[in-house]
Image (cartoon, rainbow, N blue to C red; front, side):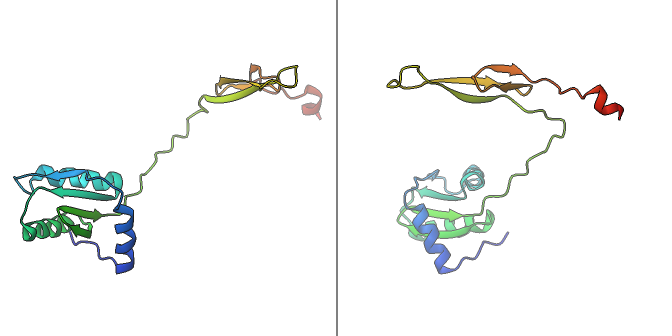
Length: 156
């Protein structure tokens, strides 16, 4: 897969975003193994922008690792500074499955109960309301009723 080509302005933005990041992939004495590539791919899928620390003193080997990773993982090389390599790849959109038969789930609602005396704080109570229930104005949980239609109105 070819690597992603970025403009210098885009590369500058990604360098600024990567400044505070910690390395998520470490390359040891064995170099680029299949496990390292797999971890870098998983990190790119999860984060999009990652730092990789290489424990090698050879600068040309680190540059070769950056090129290899960017080509094999379809990522853009952002920066190589010291023993840190920065790669970027856009995060893929997650497809969300829609279930048509799904009913409304439970939700937590905060209910404020005010004191009869004016100077006190209101009491906050968290109430779980299920899909077939409703919350009254007094803070009570009631089961939702099916509204019945009038016999007189339906006969017309």
